Amino acid sequence: MKIVVAQMKHETNTFSPVPTRLERFAGGRTQPLEGRAAVEALSGTGSASAALLEVALKAGAEVDFAIAANAPPSGPVENDAFDHITGRICDAVRKGCDAILLDLHGAMVTRRYDDGEGELLRRIRALAPEVPIGVALDMHTNLFPAMVEQSTVIAGYQTYPHVDMYETGLRAARPVAAMLKQRGHPAMAWGNRPMLPHVMRQGSDDSPNRELQARCKAIEQQGALSATVFVGFPHADIPNAGLSAVVVTDNDPALARRWCDELLDLAWAQREAFVYRAEPLAASLARAEQLAAQPGTGPVALLDHYDNCASGGTMDTMAVLGGILDAGLSDVAAFAIYDPEAAKRLAAAGTGANLTLPLGGNLEMPGIHRRGEPRVVSGRVTRIVDGIYRNEGPMARGEEVNMGSSVVFDTGKVEIAVISRHVEPHDIVSLRSLGIAPENKRFLMLKSRVHWRAGLRRYAKAIVECAGVGVCTSDYGTLDFKRVRRPIYPLDAM
Image (cartoon, rainbow, N blue to C red):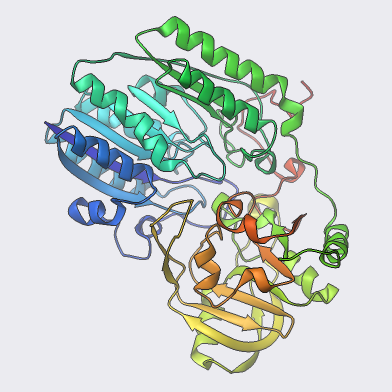
């Protein structure tokens, strides 16, 4: 018995100017890993791929790991990158197999296709029309019909921060393994609702998503093979952006339909609770100072959530960091400003060097009609690292991360991490690898929305969400939606 396993992951922000070429899928290498190298890199980690591998091996299968391609969110995927990745997967399928297990994202948009995952599955089905396919998807999937029609089993993350990637891989793979032993016949039902939940209201620790995900788990306890509510990724101007659900049962399509409709109705009833309203940056920083003066240990977390690279942000806008500098906040650690040229210049100057240089603001943002605005900053280089570390978890546990040549630039009041590859701070090692102990800081500025909670929330005594500048804006009025289905809430009164 032979099972093809593959990973193709990208969340596409169609408003992002950050290009998505093949090397972005390679984790700092020139090409994504394949075969034995991919198996060695992902086995034993907290990834969905690790779970797919485990299920396949426990089934006694020979595993062909076609490719491990995982890119940080950014703009639409270039055609040659998409064709290379799908080509490697199709090459493996073409050799013959008994099942296919895929670790996908679900919100990939390419230069040609609104539904990158659906196109991959269509190409696979042309080669293997009867082979069972299990698919693990991100909670931010924008679900299209082709994803469901061309798959056998779909399971999506039930947590945000995504700390259940591995468990989701098990939920996607186990029904397929059972099929190979003639012990099941999955039936799927899916649907969507015309709503674009704000990402800042999607955390699974908070209402209303907490209750939706709890109901998914309850449905699985009642017998479903998998139940998922996808909150969707709203920064993709494509027809099917938004909330959806899929339920898989064992040979009971009517029950799958009933449970799926229940989940969708529950979500629609809470649509207003998914709307996020930001406050002005000056008010946020003033409130942060008040919170820092109150009793308690640990920093006040300042979330620069308009510029989160894990939602396709450039990670180089300076509005929030500039506000912190202008307000005179002290004892601050800031992670991070993406500026490869500044990092190179600072590293060349060496530890202990004092410099004044423009920082950030290198990328134009035509998707929100904003230009990049660098900020001149003076400080001292206090640490230089290669930027490679391994996640402690719980999110993406054990996976290697490469933020490229990285520097800590200390203004005297603010320690600024300057990095060369896009990395969202969701793991404590991202900071400790730079010599930063966040628990000892007064303020901790993070370019993050929700994922920071996974590994860093326990260190913060208070949280202030700071509306800066970026293509991850929570102000839908600044996004020029042209292709998303209409009417849709909250763009339209419904």
